Amino acid sequence: MKLKYNLTALLLILSLGIVYAQNLTLSYELTYHPFDGDKKETQTQNYILDVVDGKSIFRTEMRRTSDSLLANGKFGMGYNINTLHELYLTKNIKESKINKVYVSPLSRDRFFISDFKKLDWKISPETVRIGEYNCQKAEVEYGGRHWIAWFTKDIPISEGPYLFHGLPGLIIQIKDDATDFDFKLAQLRKNINNSLYEAEEGKEISWVQFNNLLLDYFNNPMNMSALGGKKVMTDDGVGGYKPVNEREFTKKIQDNLIKNNNPIELTHKINYK
Image (cartoon, rainbow, N blue to C red):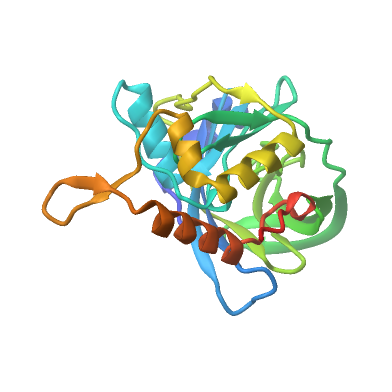
């Protein structure tokens, strides 16, 4: 895969000498297998990692656009009915705080999990060149998966996609050994707005409570919407909206969750029935 980046912005960043004031926007392309045990079906998703003064947020491109709209007093955008496609994580490197963010797709209630152990990286002397970068190998266990990362000291920030951080350089690529998830750096540029568009409100929950929320959503998604005081609507085909058929909508969500059930954290996988 060829790395694309804004050369002017990169040269400006490098000229600052000390980690370019830590303000970067990085794009990662995720290639993944959404179906458990099925290597034939492959999907891709673009994610953005914004880094500002030691804090960062990792989320889909659409979620970042939505957060920026909300931060400017406008309406945000919708959510994927399968939250496994909405990897959303915040890091505060200075304070060693990590939050996995979950937003209920229908009620829009916001929750976060902060129960993470420190990543125990094993750095190897093995090196390789990926695009423009000289990279070194590192390995770690996380979420019931064994991960292999390639990082570069050419960009000396201890960051990477999703939870992955703590190496002496930026992670250019990381994938699990089953190749279910493969993150690759696609673009690097300066964060010209010096903003994360961060939404700080929400309720802290445990992993057990997180799994219970997912089960509640699976068992009765329409009820999750009702708890938020919202009605689920769909396009009526003539420019307006109409209420969805609850039974059909519920079955659609349940079928989707059962089929697309290969989470990044295998240790917290739910066996939907």
